[in-house]
Length: 298
Image (tube, one colour):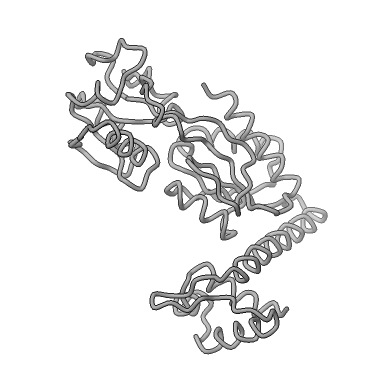
């Protein structure tokens, strides 16, 4: 298969649009269409389902896209390793991460890794949990570090551990001395919540609905740091992961209390890579260091 045709095909697969792929590649829509038509003739099956709002991969297209992504990533990886033979340079590790890990944990792990591998370079993108998985699936990130409540067949989970949700509050709060709280315990108090794109909010909304509880947040925000400061200043309760606030609880005068409900314990932390991709030695080593750090987190 022609590399240009595969590159055009993958651009449409990632964007779901001929026009967006055209803008990204700086080639005409007609040129992209011709290359995709040639590919479809070669494989003998349609690769896309043409829909009013864009292009959706067919079953054959999904298989080809997964193969092309792995092939391109492994090709880039080999070139990086060849360059490393002649110089001190090494691979660039591209990480996509949820916000919770980008504040404290990842800077610590990257700094430690550079002590023994100073030629490695890192690119970190902080984004919403579902976008982390999408970037790994599309080949835009080598490693994803995120929260998830499900498995994706195109994603290999290198490591997972439970990530229950906690209620964050001031140490002087009426509920602060409890060993755990229920969703109903939180209802009488002002609450600040993350927006609905986050796994915390999604799980809390489902749990509240199942329990027949209605919450009217005094603040909704897409940034956990903002909610943490707001909780510290206002006395409101917010929801968090221990990974997000563990290093700040004592200095900020806050406590994180487990929420005693099965629906609030379904989420896991996942280290993700693309399924079927062969990882380079440096990627494997960094994944191992991430796993070790997560295992040490309490």
